[in-house]
Length: 415
Image 1 (cartoon, rainbow, N blue to C red):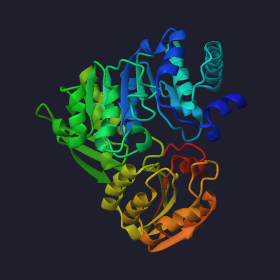
Image 2: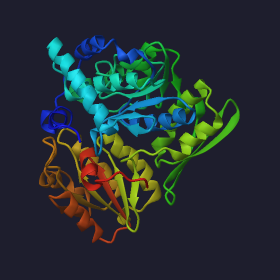
Image 3: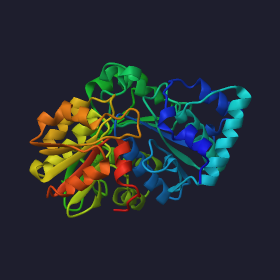
Image 4: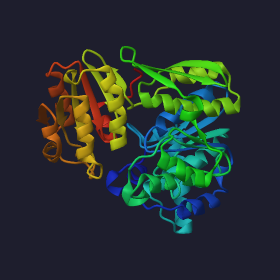
């Protein structure tokens, strides 16, 4: 069991702050002999799709026999999920041990780290101790000034760029793309988008980038029965077809970003197919129950809402779906709810009382009830789920904040 102080330093949302910059992390890492230089790195940024892309990469590299580390955020159930070695989360013992080691360094150097910075330093040191060969490294926010951007990566992947975190990243897609392009170093740059504003900014950093949409021109189809995605494309005049275990039009592009890395590293077709068919990523159109189908999706921003709309409107009638949602105050709430109205005719607004940034369910109702044929307010998420189950809908979609998903699915699912 993790100590109270560790949980307070790493998990307590009341202590959560964001201070962009790398200096503090670099100073601590230097005192640890720069563990981030002990392995090769695939660095991933983007508005959405980072976690799924990282999961595809992790599966393929692990199947090929590499010792693989993966760093993602935020977690759903436990902080250990953020730091994964060979598919296994860091143990409480290892996390606690390195935490105290880093805390001592912080005291010696009189440096205070934010929650994310502290977790990032712990991660780099842990993976050095595990002697990994590849680190799949997800950016926390943005890129250029992110705590993870203290590495020289072999691959920089930018999945997509939309408006997000404008108070820190910029007020246009171009400005945000420039911030994300800050992870580009001397390795190869891979893009999961061909948006003009993004391409223009990336071109300033790397003129030899790989745009997987233009490179492979994929055809993506969805299967709402098996909750899988089929992708077809040509690679050097060879027809390729994969059945992806993750559902979503956007998952096709996430897979292609990983596919390019796999081919560049010479992975076998067996390992690539293994990544396609076995990868799991919790909280991304994740089916956790049937009759009715209960689907979890951490649609935490407007771009995410637009992505799941693209997938679900193709597969299901909106009158067969009820949404349970709670959204953080600093998101584009009204715009997200308008997208949700394309997915479902019924919605239940609920609250996340454990998060200071959570929006009250009554305020959510005031912001978006008019978009839906039926709207309900239920302060407690579990009671909201019970209410949803009485509405006789085929699908219950739990979406919005990641913190809501954690409340309604207390144990990780293998579905």
